[in-house]
Length: 377
Ligand SMILES: Cc1ncc(COP(=O)(O)O)c(C=O)c1O
Image (cartoon, rainbow, N blue to C red):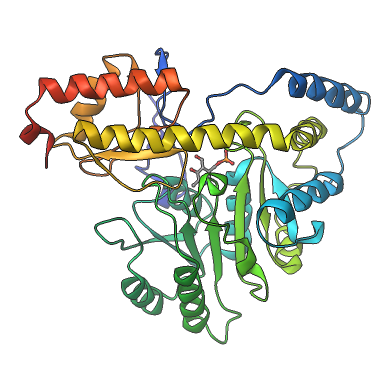
């Protein structure tokens, strides 16, 4: 039988695995950082109206520049991100993964490199490879914060073209201080002085769940700094596929060089606009999820687990001698969490109170069955 590696694929893709969080049919799914709440009915109806109107014009290509949507995204960020932005500073695509891909197609590519601080969002490395960009893994401290001095040295040594800073970081939940972003931005520009500098991408997919303010204001006066956002998490619209970036207008102009014409369908634009009309209702769910996230932290600690401080809608917990066996034991009780391959640790997404109770019960059972020592590294 022909396998992938028998095909004339690019050398750097040989032997690699695709992104693949398991999509298993179990009662409680807390493994992909989705929002557990379905969209409210009034919003579902509004999407129906907006999409019906868009359907009347589906014989035409969509607005290639998504002007109305970018205007509304700019309004939302200006209201919630602590910094005024205009539509010229916003670009939108099919999920923030596509935003990251367009950035790497524009600023990375063959002969160039991207650096991230792992463990972090695995797609940073995968999209880098997919765009022919060399991937470099930088260090973190034991508590999963970024080791600024080690990061500066890695940047000075490798002179990456793109630096990823994920805040709050997936899968650890760790938020990054503005001072750290500024230090790494300066280091990245200094390392590539004379070449136009390096692009620093702040991935704020979970920004709305953070205890800290957004890092958005840092784009002011820093043309090589991009903040990437998504409607998949806080807006509860993972199925919509809508991500966006905020940056200097020159970055928005630059990604036009690689975006496919009419990449964002009229249906997507209409749906996202409807969701943005309901921002206040959707952000109330975010407050509930933050409270549930904090409850998970408290209760996991009471059970005897170690927990990484979380600014996201998920919690990293451990430490297990065999994290994969613990993952399986939790799954056997009908609860799907995520094994991100971080030795000793698993990640659980904050669900509804009932889902979180089911998860906590499963962990209690797991910890009762094993001696505490067995659960430690
Ligand atoms: C850190 C981070 N960035 C980006 C994404 C991609 O989100 P989307 O493509 O749904 O916008 C995710 C999804 O889990 C994520 O965890």
